[in-house]
Structure formats: structure tokens, C-alpha cells
Image (cartoon, rainbow, N blue to C red; front, side, top):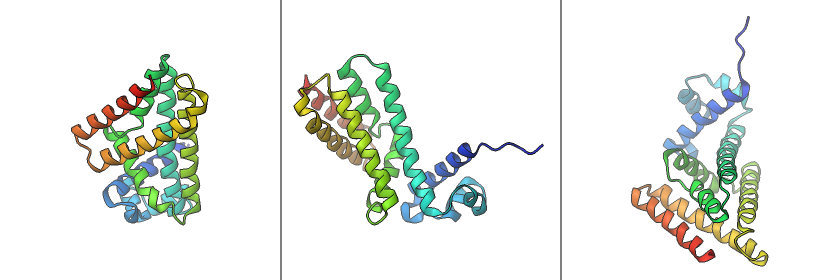
Length: 190
């Protein structure tokens, strides 16, 4: 009997390999050959799961977005206190450990690539819409309704700035500074 292959798991493995290449060689270095080498497979196997490099790149960005969003939802569901919930979600969104640092390296690599690539741009816009919606929802019990959208946008800007700073200089001091900046923002809410 032939071995049953989990198609989704195989795609995840290939996307993870693309992340490894991306984090080592940058977006320009992501070729099907390099991803195949990182995944210890052939380019033919990649072609079985992805139509080409562009589809693999979109899947890479989508997986970073999906994983981060799922973790944030899980954290939000576990915390009853609105301020603690928002803090936990914000800290989870920052590159404060190796897994999240890799996600941020993926995101930053794709930001410039979204210019002129409608698929990547669409995926990026979708991520930011979902992120703003999640932040607005988390802010509702903490701020007047008329301030929610502005505060959500400020938080997006804060997290992006802190995330870039920590990604480019992932030291213990920068991670502590990012956490302190989140706390300072939240202290102004209460």
C-alpha cells in the first residue's frame, strides 16, 4: 500500500525551508533550488506542491501571518482582564524569541517585495486589516469608542517600529526596551 502523504504538512515543510533560505540569504536568495536543498528534496517535489517561486513566497508570507494570528487569538482567549489581554497580544506580536524573530525577518523581507507584486501586496494588506481589527476589538473595553481606530493605528505603528528595531538588533536590551515601550503606551490608557 502506498505511503499516505499529508499534503498540508509537506507544504508547511517547504515553506519552513523557504524561511530558512530567506533568513540566511534574503528574499533575492530564495530560489526553488535553494529551497529544495534546505528541504533536502528535489525542485520537482516543490513543483508538486507550488506552481512556482511566487506561489511559494505568497505561502511563506501567509504562513507567517496565520501562525502569528493564531497565537494571538489563543492568548486573547486565555486572559479575562482587558488590559492584560492587550499587553499579552502586543508582546506576542513582537520578535522577543527565536520563532517570532524569524517571522519578523520574513515580514520585513516581504515589505519591499509587495511593491509591484499584487499577490504579496494583497496578502500584506489582509494581514494589516486583520491586525487592526483585532487591536480595535481588544481596545473596546479600554477606551472611548471614538478613539478606538486612532489607538489601534498607533499600536500598529508602535509594534512595527519596535519589531523592526528588535529584528535588526535582537539584543536582550532591545527586547527589554520594546517591552517597556508597550508598557508605557498601556499605562497611558489606564
